[in-house]
Length: 213
Image (cartoon, rainbow, N blue to C red; front, side):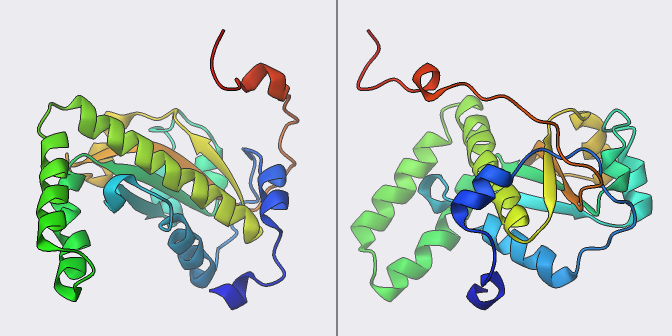
């Protein structure tokens, strides 16, 4: 993977050049290797308890993208882009705790006491009602979504994060289990036109030092 990234933009250049692109060149296919690498980089995002709450539902077939068009309120970018990636958040990520930490316990990297305490803490956090699991699903899936968009830009592709889609209908259309929350739809492809210029607030309007007064 490191070899494949040689010659790419710097992290600063990626962050400064990434913009939401809504017009794509139709008919462009992304090589599977590129798409795989983008997803691998996205999956390296941080997550609460390292439970990796995200799942990526990737739609590349043209007919399937067209079926998503009315679900996305007929935003043409869904049909014209190379891939639509639905970022899902795991509402039952606590079920992954053993798979994450059991190898550490068995290798001796984690004591039995630490293992039992950590899994108990995770179980307790997910037993307190639906708000906590939902917040964790949204929060951690959003981290992966942002990393995905930056990875795509580093590989020479443009993206657009979309919250405007029917979450009930997309569940039905793509047979998404109740365990997973549709958090975001991301279009990915080659830009047909530059993104619109956007203004940004100055830092003094965004940053508070130490505390509010």
